[in-house]
Amino acid sequence: MFLRFTGAFALLSLLVPALAAAKPYLSSGDHSRLVNRLTCKVTDADPTVKIKPRKVVYGHSKKKKPLVAWIVEPAKENRDEAQNVYLIGAQHGDERTTSRALDYFVRELKLVSDDYRNERRIIVIPLYNPDGYKRNDRFANERIDLNRDFPSSDGAEGAPNAKETQAFMRLMEKYPANLIYNLHQPFRVVLYYPEHEEIAKPFGLLSDYPLGSDVGYPTPGSLGTWAREQKIPIITVELSRSMKKAMAPFIYEEIRLALFHASFGCIPRSARNSQLERYLAE
Ligand SMILES: [Zn+2]
Image (cartoon, rainbow, N blue to C red; front, side, top):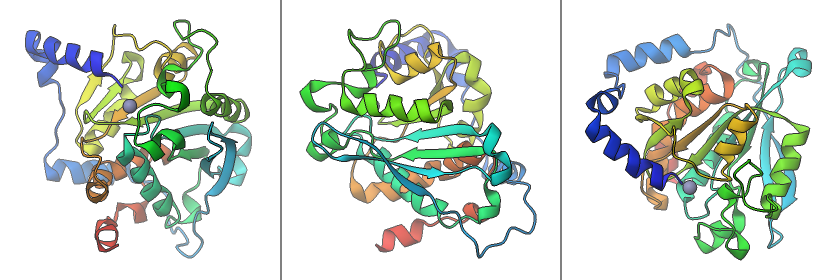
């Protein structure tokens, strides 16, 4: 999505070496120390009772495909002050690995002890644009770019115009967003606005993706632009390049700990175990 911006950033990086040098890579030892530090402080979690994400059909696409969200409710004692965290994949239908990665993530949520639910309501939308996905096309029907269809101050006339966006806005009326992670491809970078740097950093460190800032390069009508105007923190994660199905488990493996941390605010202990071999055997 940030094609213009990325090109400009690359140019800027050449001109300003400090920007290019600001990428924080960790050694494997430092990485495991970070994972230890970010592991949830939940003691004696009962491993027999697992999280059960609830499947919610929040609308239908133009071609009448269900728009599905998987919702993990907050722990009972936190219902009143729930923080709604959204993870979104495949706004652009041809960025297929984003959707597959979130499918894996939903499967792994079901392996986590129920004791890890906290004040967050985790809302995962693996396939935001099912019509585009089916055609392997960036756009929804009528050539609408779903990441340019938000009613931001610079948005398109009449936005939101697509049924998919309208349904998503209704979902956000029910569960107002406190934090959004929007997954795209293929630039392998964590993009953030300066005021959200502290949120972006752990995602970058855990995934080993570089951080990038999109200051000054408008993407009119994007979810990012709209959310920023609404003062909703939003991180756009551009996954690695390959859209091949065979590569999806590997690309998911890059970001899985970051997704858990993004969702729970910490990493559930059992989630530290990779499921990669299981996916490769399928
Ligand atoms: Zn995209």
